[in-house]
Structures are given as C-alpha cells and as structure tokens.
Image (cartoon, rainbow, N blue to C red; front, side, top):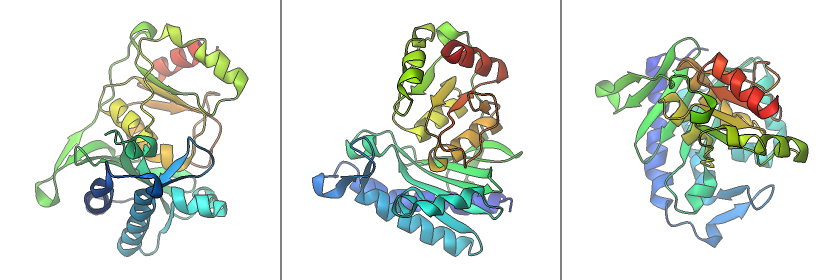
Amino acid sequence: MMPDRTDLSAIAALLRDVARTIVMPRFGHIGPADLRTKSGPLDPVTVADEAAERALTEGLRALFPDVAVIGEESVAADPALLGAVAGPGPVFVIDPIDGTQNYAAGLPLFGLMIALVEDNRTIAGLIHDPLRDDTMLATSGGGAFLLRGASDSAEWLPLRVAAPAPLAQMIASVSWQYMARAEKSRVLGSLAALGQTPNLRCAAATYRAMASGHMHASVSRRTLPWDHAAGTLIVEEAGGHVRRPDGEAWRPADIDGGLIAATDRDTWHRLRDALYG
C-alpha cells in the first residue's frame, strides 16, 4: 500500500484536527492529575496523549479500514501489538505526542507523528508541528515535503538536509539516556569533537530540524518505531543517510540496536567513527 497525495493530505488533515481540538487546548494546562509515568519517571504520559491516540486511531480506521493501527500508548498497554510492525501487512504506527516531557512542562517543542509500515519497512511518514501548524511528510522513493495549508490551496515545499559540515561545526542531537554504561561513557567522552550537541527531548522536532537543513545528525540508542519510523524516512527522502551504528539498515522492528541519522554517507561515517571508533 503506497499512499498518494490525496491519502497523505487526508492523514495530514487528521493530524491537524487532532492537534487543534485535543492537543493544543490542553497545552499549558497539564496538572498532576493529568500526568502519570509508564516505565519510570522519565517516561511520562498525559491525558492528552491518550485522547489524541484514540482520536488518531479512530480517524485512520475510518480512512483506511483495511489497515491495522497501533500506537505508543496501546503498545504500552499490550506489548504484543508491537509485533505488527514486523509483519507483512500494512500498519499505521502512531506517536500521539512526541516530546511529552516538553508538552507536560509547557515547553513548545513537541509533535504528532504517524508512520505507515509494511513488511518491516517504512513506506510513508508524517510529522505535524501543532505550533507551526504544518506537516512534514514523505513516501518511500517519493521525496520529502513540507505541507503548509489545507485542501486545494496547500503548498508542497521540497525538503533538503543541510550541506555536510566538519565535525567541529556539526550540530548533532545525541540521546544517550538508554545507552549502557560503557557505551554512554564512550559516546559522552567523544562529544567535544562536535560543534553543538543539543538534546531537544523530542524526536519529532529533531527530525524536522534535520530535514529542513538546521541540524546535521542525530544519535539514539532506543529506537521504538513510533519515535523514529516517520522521521528517518523523511530525513532519507530529504537526502540524508540513516543506519544503525554497525552500518546495517535500520528497520521499524529494531527497537534497541541504536540509530545514527546524518546528512550524507560521509558525514555518517565521520560521526560514527568519532563517537564509536
């Protein structure tokens, strides 16, 4: 199942509607009663995450009744659902609010993401920014675009990653939270070689920054599909290079092998060698 522009526009409209009606009205108003943790204190979920995932799930099922749908919160409740991403059939993977820590704290850096996965490959991905009210999207082999506006008047603006930069000028987001102690020590001890190492606490914002040419690379250890499937496809279709640290292709079912995304192949190798060599 390869979605066309009509399909992508419909999904983008759904993301926009859920952002406007569920996510943004609660932004800045999340209190203790609206917040709980899942795997630990650094893994929060809010009532807005849960409500947004329900709405996105219902909307996708209405638009594409023959396609399975899973989301971050549904998998938290039933981990067996995660197996669908490795299966042969198409499945939508939802991150209802990526950057929940930021969202709950009232920090304006979060997004909504949907990826379409088939046979353990991402074939379409969308990242909506509720504050900018626009959506980055891509299909496999079809390029990456910024979709601005709605309906027939929408603009489809091509996306392109930044030009390569030397290590000393490289802006790379390095998320080391889930690295084992030895890997963490090795990577953190190598960061001085890079120009800047911001951690936005939001994969949606990080991949949007890469796809629009404002960041050169990102490094992650835990690679759950709702965090990375949409963004890695958008970055690749914008000209970037994405691989696991061992050089193998990353697939949505690879949830803990690590992931490096960079502006091109040479940048990827220079960054991997600097951090892991």
